[in-house]
Amino acid sequence: MAIQYDVHLDTLGLFCPMPIIKTSKKIKQLVIGQVLQVVSDDEGIKKDMPAWCETTGHEYLGLEEEINGNTIHYKTYVRKAK
Amino acid sequence: MSTTAKLDPQVALAELQERKPDRVTIVVLSGSMDRVMSAFIIATGAASMGMQVTMFFTFWGLNVIRKPGVSSKARDWLRRAFGLLNRGGADTLPLSRFHFWGLGTHMMKLVMRRSRMPGVPELMDMAKDLGVRFIACTTTLGLMGITKDTLLDGIDQFAGVSTYLAEAKDAQVNLFI
Image 1: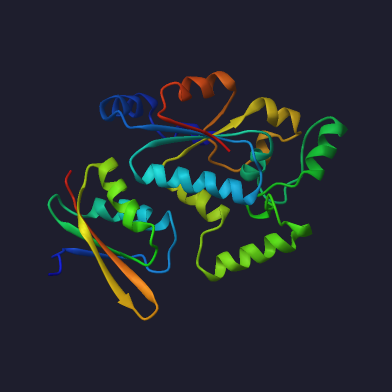
Image 2 (image 1 turned 90 degrees about the vertical axis):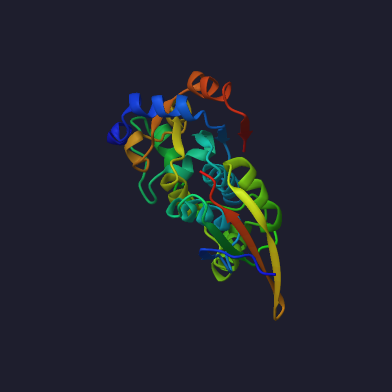
């Protein structure tokens, strides 16, 4: 079942550290409790997003992988916690 | 430099003491594109994770924060000559390997542009935007015939080794690139 989210952030085609930088900017626009979906095709996001959440204190909800032609789209979910 | 007065130091300090963020210092000694890119990627990444980042530019690293195309204004001819030979500007840094008189670096930049990867100037703007502090080492500025007025605007401090150590002793991550 797909995870419900409030705000979507597209970082397709961008490399490290851009997805994390964009996430940190975007999360500021959310209110506490809202969920942000970050879509990336950089595999590093699988480890980077949980690490970012651990450091910043936001809640990491999970990952979905979607095969899209010959690339994989990684959808990560973060709940704003503070 | 007028840029130091942007933040009220008292307010900034009080806020820092309250938040107690993790701190990162990066010494940028190298002036090679690949190394400098790594430094900025770590700096911007850390800043996005809520850490307080300070970058110290020294020796060849000073080339990164020089205004492009501005020649040295050092007083004695020896330093001026050195400043002329040692070209500055974030966009003109050579690769540490495979530079091949510019061809290798040019090819790398082409690949980066095609895959929408930010280069050193873009990463540097992003770092500034995220609140990364830039410090230029005064000793090596003098040594290399680089004058303050030929550096980019937005250098937060001009300082030496004590300033670096005072920062580094309270930081959790200290890198030398």
